[in-house]
Image 1 (cartoon, helix red, strand yellow):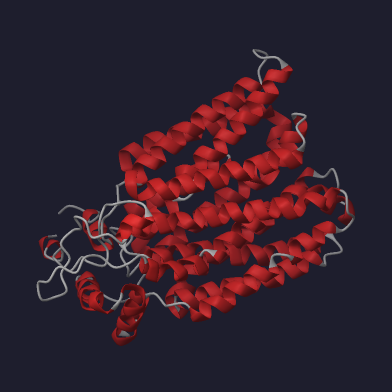
Image 2: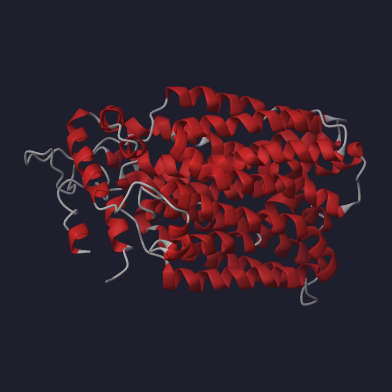
Length: 491
């Protein structure tokens, strides 16, 4: 512990910076932390603008993730009629959940792929099954062909978000790392909105749902192309023994004056590792198991809150309440996008832990409104307003913290040697829970009703608040090295 403690020195330039907020403030040097260039000269902080374009390209994978989450929302009824399984809730659930099963497989291998070929190539590879799967779904003539296409798409979805979280964490300066991390949630929200917009004509125009799947091919191709011109993660390059290439990438991300300090910190950060080889048993039995437990539990509680049931089946729920699905789903998309922008503003101001607690607390209140709407305490008209209002509040508060924060936290909490594989394990757990929520939601809604089901979701949100207060470490403004040392087990 004491050896690791000596690693914290003046070389923490790359990861630390001014606590001023707002993009205009990022370029000011009013009261920054003292950052040295190796000869004792104060050189301020690196500009956020250099890394921005690379982060934006990577978040295209999150846009595709959001699009494929929502593409079956408006189109599911048309798909079921055309492919001959209308009224079969299990088959409809499979159209949703097969994608999530593929995502589980993709996430299991995302760490190995990201460490094997690099973050940049991994993001390019995730686009390939999305292009193939979307094309298969668009041309499907049967339920099984649709499910196979969704399985391929899911594989890309499992790889993309996990690798994008790693990439954004490793190319971003600490003072904007949370802000940049929240871009992935904004991109997911834009993807959901896009799928809702393009899905509106599906009930009026026969076969329009096929156009909805074809439309996702373009952003996947753009992701694969533009990542070719983006930087590789300097952390991955250094880990692979390519120090000269890591320096070149740091220069693109930070500018020449900051390269020496960034490389000094990176080399010191890796110096205490026992070996370069990695074993998955370290995540289950080694000193990383506590962080794996925290990350997996956060993702499980995120999904058990019921959020993706809202995204997948909001059309069905709103129609049951007598609300036109088009306008209701658009409101859901706007609420998600608005919450994502709030998260972007507050992530590096209030911190990850505060946003998580506030987010899940707001979701408890929203579920209480949903529960009240399903009782005899209110009239039918009032129940409709409460139900819709509760759902929109639920989505808004989710997007402020419970949506973007877990993936950001995970990418920050693990040391570089195990980061990719550890994130992939936690994400795989996330997809398992996601799969069963998507598969069973409609059936549970039929069998136990919205009152009991929403009560269960609300209970999980409350459990999340208690779990976060006790177990989650605040990482705002800290270098990846500082976070690693803070999480080391006491001796």
